[in-house]
Image (cartoon, rainbow, N blue to C red; front, side):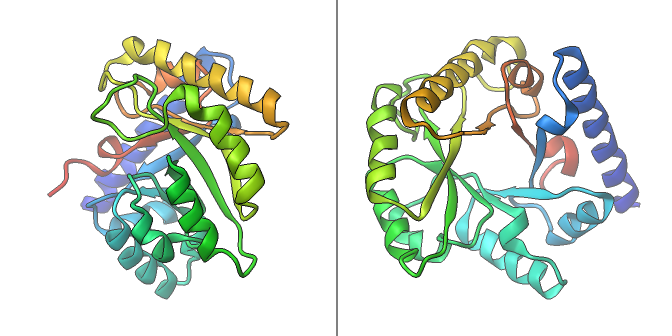
Length: 234
């Protein structure tokens, strides 16, 4: 019964994403669905993988690593399908570096240095810079005015960190079109950074259940959706 409900919700979300892409003239292949699986059972993740879901987002390092062990024991490659989307403390860099397909929440030189130190054996770690897009003092993320200098620092001092683009959490939550100006700002910041650094910066991680359509309209390449797929956390 639970598997059937999970499949139904997943199918509805996929169809909705496809419709949003059509509405805003985006190729469906240009937007990836990240199933946010934090505090949901790894068995549900395995079921979703069987339905065709390719990538999963985790917020908490210990929970993610525990699930990674189960995924590996099931014959999957967690380093290819798990994304870390929550705030990351520098002291946990050793547990994280090289073990995730993408880290969405790089936001300081201290964290970058800690990750780089753990990647000295030659492994590469794809990352996104988290931008505090609403300039909110209570939130993590890099200030927009510091973005260019930080990207240059990564290029000069962190050769094992592959900068792929930007991520944000808008100050309005589940607000639909009200979030769109913040997504537009992140897109423009990414475009400016691409010009300045010469990097491709193909990824924009933005948009969740209540505002992913606005994010897709503004160029999101990864949308992060959890409850709409998995249902309420137990």
